[in-house]
Length: 296
Image (tube, rainbow, N blue to C red; front, side, top):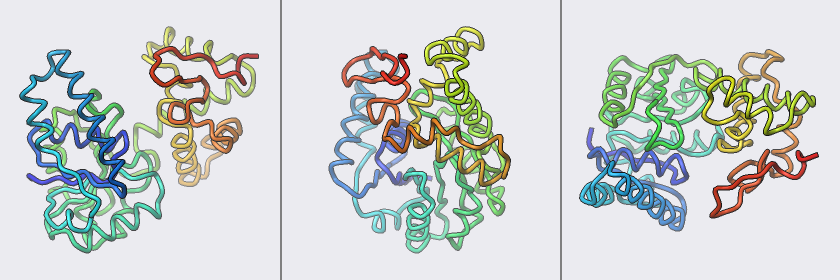
């Protein structure tokens, strides 16, 4: 495996491209807009410079990593020369369907198609292709250059060969791959998202305030970040989408998203990405405060 295509130049996409290129793979980062690709290269460069300043990488490592990355707005052309395509588009099944069908129609027979989806069924994504044995999940954690876990999700038809290839490739990225099966939420989000949803219910029902809830979980449970701040970091829209996948998949009321979460997403309060969620985030500042609506 030499040539990797990453589809989607957002936070996760540029993080995955960064890690793959840093470990010697030739990477093409693809998105619909040239400006998004330029922004991604700027972010990758900044993150590499941070690694150099911390003596994690050398200046030569940084240059070699950047030289391993190219960009394109033409997925169809790029996919024809890819050994692995990692889809990192939005958590929208229709968007992913179009991407998977396009890749499948032009990629070589040996090409593996992976998705970084955090909740959508790999078996469902594989059904959009004529190569279900070569479709798999690679759920990286944010921030990708730092977090060690890759949740490797086997669809119903994913072959042992594909699974072993991706497990080995993940180790080449200096990650720790964990193989799981294709059920709603997989392992990470089946456990994490109900906890976040319950924290939102705890706030909604007046059991505790924002900082109090997060402090209990940080100091009492040794979590590095409280669940409400983590929800802001993930994106409340993403949290809602995953809760809906869990609820639809299990038909169990315990997975019903909290009304407060639904209302915040509807109001555009999405967390860090919008500047406000449970906390307020000011660009260029590390200081965060509880959002005005929760300061009462």
